[in-house]
Image 1 (cartoon, one colour):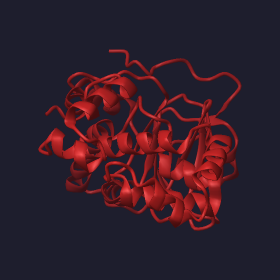
Image 2 (cartoon, helix red, strand yellow):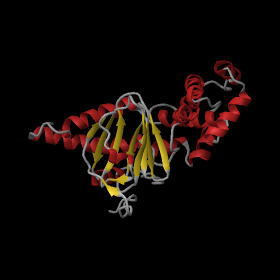
Image 3 (tube, one colour):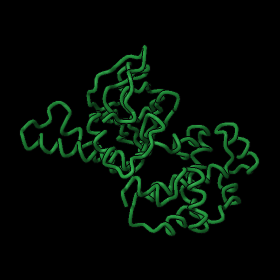
Image 4 (spheres, rainbow, N blue to C red):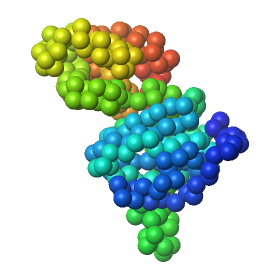
Length: 289
């Protein structure tokens, strides 16, 4: 079966080896800062707080310690920025294994970009550490260890498809706000995270917390991010909703309230309008529930 992401190698782009490794501030190969590609899925998992910006074709993605990135094979990408405190496990997942896991999804999601991006950072770090223990040089090579490694690889491939988002927004609102607005962005992102469930959104409290007028905030957000603060709130609410929908047992009405939507009906309408599927259909495609 030909997977929907299969294509010829990008022309005039260097191919790099598919070797699992821990990337630290003093061990980032120079080659990763130039456009390159791999023949396997490249799973990048930040292991400590910090920021890494990766350009995947025409899409620039920013990660922090809570989010990971998995780049498709034969996809041109390059690291654009790494903060001094960043450590990243770079792991490689076999294309055939990812194709098998993708085919098992019901239904398989459309592939509209060349990377998966996901949250649930603590789970990702645990899986990546287990992966590295099996595959980095010096790891166990006895038969039971190899069987465990094969089972872990199968699980990780399925988890990446279930936990990652191949079609949603290319970056998290909180990360983009912090990168674009600096110290003001740090304050805004923290306020959004703390008050997102409140209905109506406490704009007066936000103005007091930031120490700037809403008019000034709107002007700076539009200039730096191309979106008004009200739009950022909506996007952040939808991002949180996608995270909560990963729990198949959580009622949709509860998720709606936790994300700041007044009713489940309003939540479903906004979600479908923005993401192209109802919350229940979106969850079913990713969890099977």
